[in-house]
Amino acid sequence: MSSPPTSPDSTASNPHLIYLPDHVPVYRCANCSIELALQDELVSRAFSGAGGPAYLLRSVINTKVGAKGAKELLTGKHTIAPVTCLGCSAELGWTYYQAPEQSQKYKEGKTILEKAKIYKDNKW
Image (cartoon, rainbow, N blue to C red; front, side, top):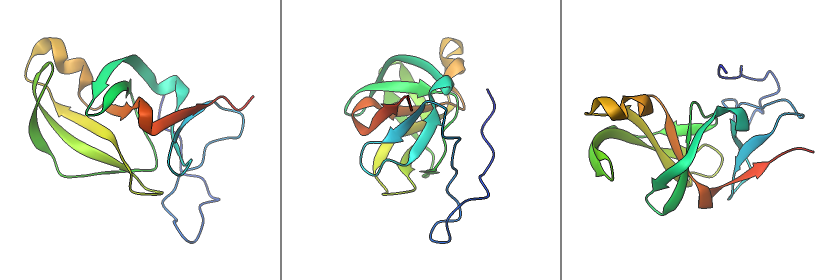
């Protein structure tokens, strides 16, 4: 699924926020409730973040990506960048830019969000 378009309803206080349709299930920031990703963007729940279980997602919205750097992770050394919430600046996880081993290349361009820092909103 492709990334959703920017909503014309962005607020004057933060014109860069993206809003998703009211009927789609999403993941939200546990701190400020800003929408972070469509649940359809989930690739895997079997990941570990810095603070525990994490989800791997194809794309995220309403986040800020920090500076890239090399980091030794459970599956080897990767080039990653920290991801924070645009709404409250909470650290959420990271984006993978480069994986050294062929078996890890599927992570490139995807983002880890720590389970403890997000919640599911099914919008039922």
